[in-house]
Amino acid sequence: MQGKLIVFEGVEGSGKSTQLLRLERWLTQHPTFQTLQSCGAVPEIIVTREPGGTELGKSLRNLLLNHQDNLALGARAELMLYAADRSQHIEELILPALKAGSWVLCDRFIDSTVAYQGFGRGLSLSLIENLNHIATQGITGNLTFWLQLDAAQGLARSRSRGQLDRMEQASMDFHRQVQQGFETLAEQYPGRIISIDAAQSEEGVALQVQTVMEQHLKIWYGKHFQIY
Image (cartoon, rainbow, N blue to C red):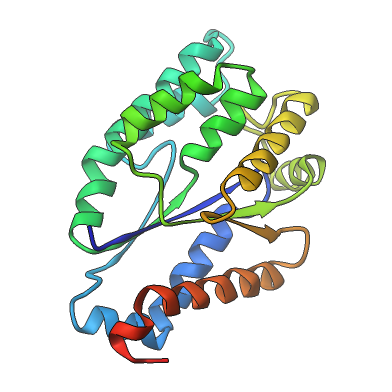
């Protein structure tokens, strides 16, 4: 498998979507990446998200995030819907892209399920681990940017943008537990999860992300292309 899966994770309002798009623009202008594309080593950069990265996923995203008074969604049902979204996402988009050598930049992946449904909802972490493994076919991602931000600060950012979705409307205790989940995961997987201080300016966060990405470009491709 030649491609790379780069994931952005974090609490609500941490700036994942913004930083993902900034990284995409930065990569397309980077000399190493331009060389990779010109020789066909990386056909394209694909930007996607969970939930909602496929047509099925869009319908599931609507069920999961849009608040509907007549829809009571239990914690286990919520978990299963996220797993269904991820399974379809892997099979339809991510796995074919990686096999083709493309880079996939994904807004949320397996760590969000552990943090939100495991730590936040209190569901079995071993159950979630098994479901994630089934849904992803064993894919964990090559690099995860964890945009570290206090849950209250993140929710304040979300509120300033307008109406909150179903997940954002959960209690502060829930979001504190989610934050703890991400902190625990970062401690468990320091080789894969890179902590980024998301409390600073958008530009400052982007520079942190770019510095880490520069290092990984050297690790992954430097010797092969003799660019550095």
